Figure 1 (tube, rainbow, N blue to C red):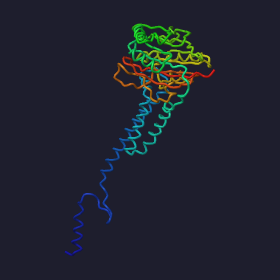
Figure 2 (figure 1 turned 60 degrees about the vertical axis):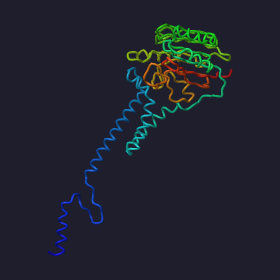
Figure 3 (figure 1 turned 90 degrees about the horizontal axis):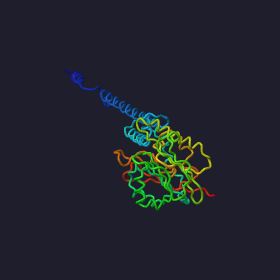
Figure 4 (figure 1 turned 120 degrees about the vertical axis):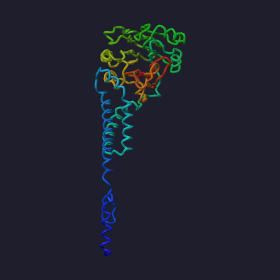
Length: 359
């Protein structure tokens, strides 16, 4: 056997070697099963990202769908979670390097952030003089801690205190904590063992326009008083709001209550100084509330407080996640605003200080 024949035989013996051979000086091509395994896995990652994105976009889009369907009304309160979810999804898409999926995720995040941004932009005037401070507290059918509430009233120098779900018992406890001496005026109706009572306590003179006790007119079984508050440099019209809560089976009545408040607002003289205060049982994720709040200043949003949460507190395993309690105003300058959580109350109280226009 010649040397050439031996070399040829040695090359022939390598034919059974696993994997293909390549040109001299170049690495052999890898076996085809590795890319085949990666491609389906990448496709499944894209599918998961797409499904999550569509779900978040669908929930976010519900804020423009005016409906009384219970599930829709509940999901409309999830706007902040949509923004957070889209932010986390964008981070996950970057980490996983799914570049072509990053475009729709970021686009959806930009839209959601644009919708949320106004709540974080303060336009209040903290250096203005305080002419009127209003606080609204849902006292949970009279169960709230009266001592804590009066401490908050004194600390913030509250001039007008609106109590929804007011009962005779909570009024007695407040008076025992000094409310009778602090507030010289009170109007409204307190009702025992029900959420429908409402009282307005004031340091300034009150003039009753309506006690708001007609359910057919108010769109709710709750009392919604309407009063004029006479402060040293002007008069402010105050309307209490407490539509029915949008519980399962009550969403039609809830929407009717918001619509009745909007109709009331539209009948007003556009030059009157106005404050609407109370537990609206709705937030800016609900089209009905946005219709009502159009042209008015929400104190907490005007103060740039962002994601305000006033419900649920006591009596619920969920953390507070939605603002149902509001102070809406027209013709007044918001000086400062805030919230106060109370023991034995499922809502946080909201307060705001206002400056009246110069006469």
